[in-house]
Image 1 (cartoon, rainbow, N blue to C red):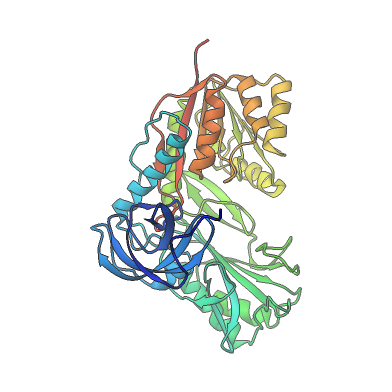
Image 2 (image 1 turned 45 degrees about the horizontal axis):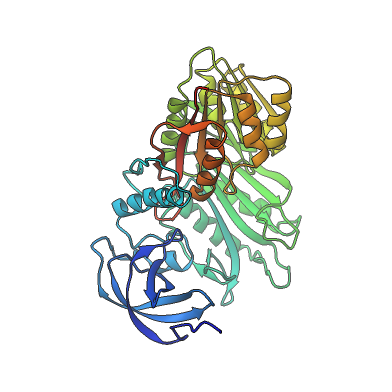
Amino acid sequence: MKKQVPVLKNQNYDVDISDLTYQGMGVAKIDDFPIFIENALPTENVTMKVIKVKKNFAFGKVVRINKKSADRVELVDKAYTQTGIAPLQHLKYDAQLKFKQHLIEVDFDKLKLNVEVNPTIGMDDPTHYRNKAQIPVRMVNGQLQTGFYRKHSHDLVPIEDFYIQDPEIDKAVVVVRDLLRKFRVQPYDEEHNKGVIRNIMVRRGHYSHEMMIVLITRTEKLPSSGEIVAEITKMLPEVKSIVQNVNPQRTNALMGKENKVLAGQSTIEDTLLGLKFDISASSFYQVNPVQTEKLYELATKKADLSADDTVIDAYCGIGTISLSMAKVAKMVYGVEILPEAVEDAKKNAKINGLTNVMFVSGKAEDQMAKWQEDGLKPDVITVDPPRKGLEGSLIESVVKMQPKRVVYVSCNPATLARDVKLFTEQGYHVNQPIQPVDQFPQTVHVESVTVLERQPS
């Protein structure tokens, strides 16, 4: 018998909101059938219209709020919700921090793992924190526009103030946009893979205030590039680097392989925890410097290092955690899959006069197995994996190396809980509360630091 779905598309229903999903959507139930509703908060009663019906759930949108949550705040701009720039902008900041703590608790509870989660470490000002912008350039109603895509679409919503970005970056994007209009540079046309300029990327050093502008083009040739570069330099005195990145492919990948320096240097410099870092157009560098310092300070403190300790930093990137730990430890080994990032890491070690570090390029899981076979005996291993978490083979290598502790920096509570379960099955345990850090205010993402210790045999 086909199960009867209790709601109809395009119909309105009055519902109570009972929970928030990990995507920040309100959850309502009609006859135990879940409906996910954007811009709805727990404890609210709303009239919603069903916009999509699936076999086991539906999506709705708020028509009217009948009873408001005490945690609701006015939207700054509905475009931030439409584009997914700030999906939690309607939730009070202290409630956002509780929501992120709750996300981690839920994922550990699902796996019946008994852990304590500390309150989330937040920001004094949870807006205008991003030090990097990647802004699409498209034709909208006959005019070149910059902005952000409406969620699940390729429709550009023109935006000038991005709310979560450094305001100086927002200003720079508008300056570049106006110059592209002035010199009649053709924006990229996705449908026909035509046009010139695809994206504008801007990076700004939080402490140094050095700025980099990257013009990402489909074509090798950037018309009027001399004039555009001269005007950018005149109008934006903080700019120390102007780069053209060429991406001719019909792809969702933001950048191509080729970078051409049009003016200034190929990198800008910034400081993190008192260390200097060179950042190139392609470097991975955390986008919220204020919270990154808290996160890495925490990771280093929780690693509980002594001057005799050997550390392995899997997923070392351009060396941010490795170099922080090298100031304390005897020796740090870092591995990273991107060869350019490893070159950056070596350069950053040199800039900071740190000689007790060694960086290699390769897959973390392969390199860990190799180090383990070579008999490397780390006291501490730190991991900061992408959202998909750790490969089983990497966990195996870590366990065989028997470090005293593993410091796990995570950007995804679900894969963190899964990996912690695997570690606990192999003799490691979480010996202190997990510490969430809010790296991305106004969004649903949460970073955290977890410490696993080897249980005495």
